[in-house]
Amino acid sequence: MTDIIFSNASILDTLGGEIGAERHLRVAEGRIQEISESPITSSGARNIDLRGKVLMPGLCDAHIHVNALSPDFAAISRLSPTYVAARAGEIMHAMLRRGFTTVRDAGGADHGIARAVEEGLLSGPRILFCGHALSQTGGHGDMRAPGENAFEGCLCCSGVGAICDGIAEVQRACREEIRKGATQIKLMVSGGVASPTDRIGSTQFSLEEITAAVEEAEAAEIYVMAHAYTARAVNRALACGVRSIEHGNLIDEDSVALFRKHDAFLVPTLSTYHALAREGVEAGLPKELHAKIYDVLDAGSKALELAHRSGVKLVYGTDLLGSMHKYQMTEFAIRGEIQKPIDVIRAATCNAAELFNEVGEVGVVAPGARADLLIIDGNPLDDIGLMQDPERNFKAIVKGGVFYKNEL
Image (cartoon, rainbow, N blue to C red; front, side, top):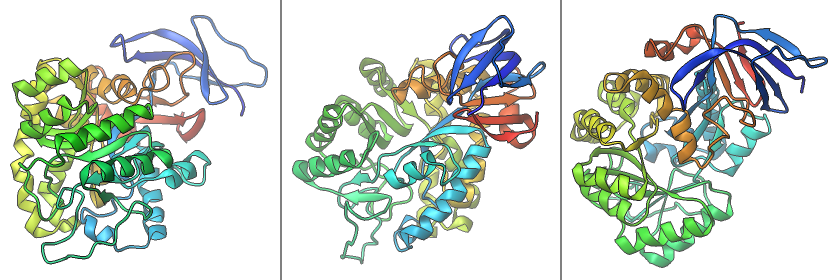
């Protein structure tokens, strides 16, 4: 790979929360090799002048489903895995074109998809995958209708979720996903919108089952992320050692105290509820499930405000499905009504890096970090709206030192 020298770059410091004086960067072998106040020379390097542009780290989305070509998960399970993978390629390519260079899949993506991206067979962000999202019988990962008794899903087959009941089955399910390279384990610990037989307010998995999953993850030096809405479900999970709570729309003061006590993270996914409310049925969500959205829609922003005010670590997530993936940038607008631009940007950069256990690897522009970079026409610290139109405002997108968009 040819060295790239970016000259006169105004770098957005996600940790410091400011844009510094112009600097010069050298990128080689997929990483930032040096940053200097003085011009850098390197034989045969490609030189790019960024004067007047802002350079920032590539974005992270901590809650996506690359296989979710529809909000009807039961329908997805009936499709050919090869067809689903092909559609996932389209979804991932669009994510990369929006500036997302690292994403964490919350159920469905596996080692094959991640490897295809790593080897350049598919264009997309680097994927941190959990394999199957684990669910109890009748939980948020069980997509059978009340009249269905057969279940063909298993840990060896492709699919968004897998069912396991009891400590021994949970342990085995975790070990299978860890064997296949999972970077985190995903548990469903409360009811959800897309599942046909549970209630939003239900708690799922026993405390012993959740603890068993946490112990298996920690033994493998990874962690557990958990789908949860209500304070009751969230608090049970945090007390058992879950590191990352997904959604959390109905948390309370006790919840935020537990987040801080356990140094855990909250990943709100507000954009998906707005999208589902507007066009979920049209996109494929079964009509009988659509009403569930309103149990959590308005509460999401209130939960974000409470968590932000209380100092909970917040990370950017979207959880969009099917045709609604196109709204991935609206999370900036929704959160921007409550938080300052730098706080929203941190959620999609350095905060995500901390959650992923990749501090210094992603989410910052610093020597040694991956050369995942965005070059923006304008200052997003002054106008978070710039992040909502990447096609116009992102002049270049670089992942691992390779340009995937270049309009400089």
